[in-house]
Length: 152
Image (cartoon, rainbow, N blue to C red; front, side, top):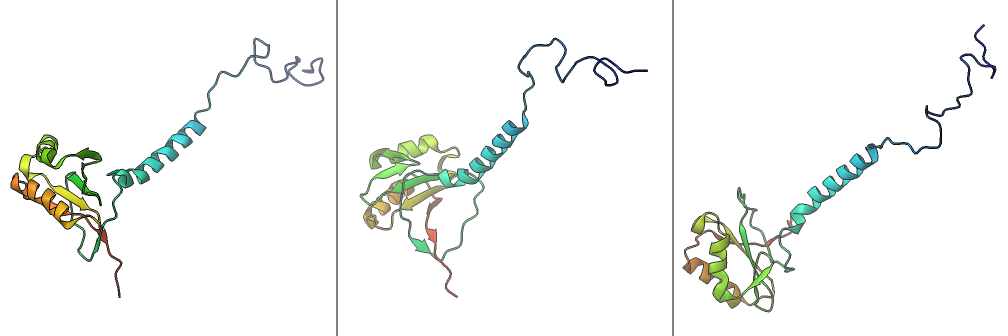
């Protein structure tokens, strides 16, 4: 009744081969592992992005002041222990600082400027940077510090 030469129903000697025969490679691409890797990379970059804001390594002082709320991305100026000045992560001479900040400022003198002074930096060097910016008309200048541990 419906028995083929191999003893099974439906007959022929097709053992899992596709039509056309031969040992052709499978042409389907499995996309699931690629999607998994891309999602993991997305999560890694989302976590690491806030840590990569400014590349100049500085030991910030600690304070009990509360954190400020900011809506727009501020301009960051850093002062290293040896007195060098950086705009974001690019070295700038103090004489060129105001013109370079003006080129970066989107809202003119209304932009927020954060000064990151190293704990061991000369107080005079940090004040020269703040004085130059204040003299150029920038009134929203803030100092960035580390949050001090709370003592109960």
